[in-house]
Image 1 (cartoon, rainbow, N blue to C red):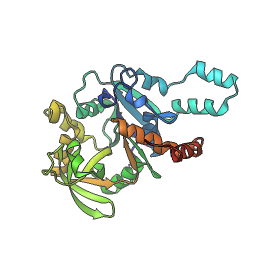
Image 2: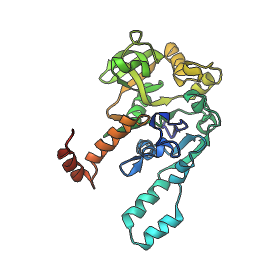
Image 3: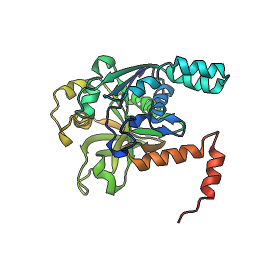
Image 4: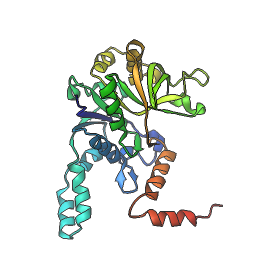
Length: 288
């Protein structure tokens, strides 16, 4: 069995990075020279995904434009013989079969995933959260797919978070199976500090089976009055268990300003074109 499809929820309003996201989708904010969402799409493609659905909202047409052809720009680059730039622009439109669906009402992550049902059909699929760029040697989605194919259970990308931050995330009940692989039998969304199950949380990636749609269809609103994906996954965890993979990679939360800044600095430090200049600049930077 292969995981051929991925869903990227990208319908959020980006309130934590205002005013930058007022007229530009936060997913289109750049990390050095590529918009954040391109990193996520490329991870899916590098993991063997052939079809990708990006769930958007009003005012996010720029995401669709980015993954489409741009005849005028391409013609200008070709005329100027800027071959490298031309190839990078064309690459965006040829990464995979990319589809778009507008979420008419913002009712939570669970609702966004539910709208993907016609696209997914009756097969397991990957979910890559639109706020999370993860830089790793082996794509994190590939890490999860490899485990899913062995375990045949809902597979979650997990990491430990600081105790002071656990109330911002989910908290999982985990039992180590081997190395970085855990059995997950319970979870809670945004627990009060001191009432968490562990410091492990679902961060950015998961492999779901199509049964998730039946659960989401009848799910009542949860935290924040929204349909929470974790509430549906919790039902599966309580009944059958899930697998948690403590993935290898550096995660950047692009839903907040510091996460976006960290991503730009650290990616720039390893960028083939500008890394030397950036290192020299940071080394000579005087901080008052």
